[in-house]
Amino acid sequence: MILSMLLAHLVGDYILQWDSLAAWKARELKGVLVHGLVITIVTWLFALPFDANWLAGVLFISLAHIAIDAVQLYIKLPIPALFRFLLDQVAHFTVIGLALYWGGYLVMPTLIIQGSEILNSDRLLVYLIAYAFVTMPAWVVVKFMAYGLVKGSPPRFPGISNKYLGILERLLITTFVALGQFTVIPLIAFPRLFMEWPQVTAEHEETAVYLAELLASVCLAVAIGLVLGQMS
Image 1 (tube, helix red, strand yellow):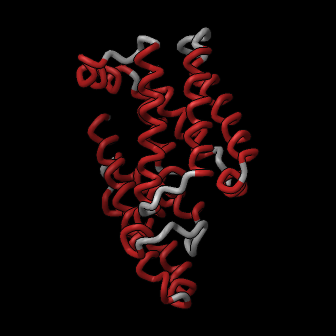
Image 2: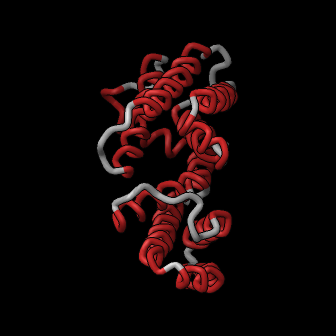
């Protein structure tokens, strides 16, 4: 259940939060409620194979998710966007952890041992989480990191880079690194750089951010590929 809820968060809060929904959620409560409905459905579907009667946990996660997002509509903390993003995710994962703890799926005194057992016993879910992360979640994380560290400002979505090419790039790099084929990394990363470089050079203010995004994206994919390679 633990891995399934982590995967549900990645799918509901990132993969199924398309650009227009994210923009709607950022300006209206209706958008937050629609996003919350998506979270509810995804969380329920991912909980079904493990506990079809865990409705209380699903509702707790979903309602708390809505509340966390709704608060951000009305309370703008005077901190950098990168830290706001991190606080948002910490809040969501804390809620998930509490729900799992109250449901008896997460035992705090043996959390480290339990985590090791879970990772070794359910490899399929671990791989699904890893590959889900390198899609939309990694794109958002890379954006916040690049803009926050280079410019100290909120990220510009979608920006210069093509997010789908970036996702494909990370998926390929993760896969080949997991297979031990490190020499193909430059061959995978170069095509996107070649196609997007003319636009990057035309927008001089975005050059440093773009390069930071590219480096962070490749490093993230390599790191995840190394972890998966160690598990195989």
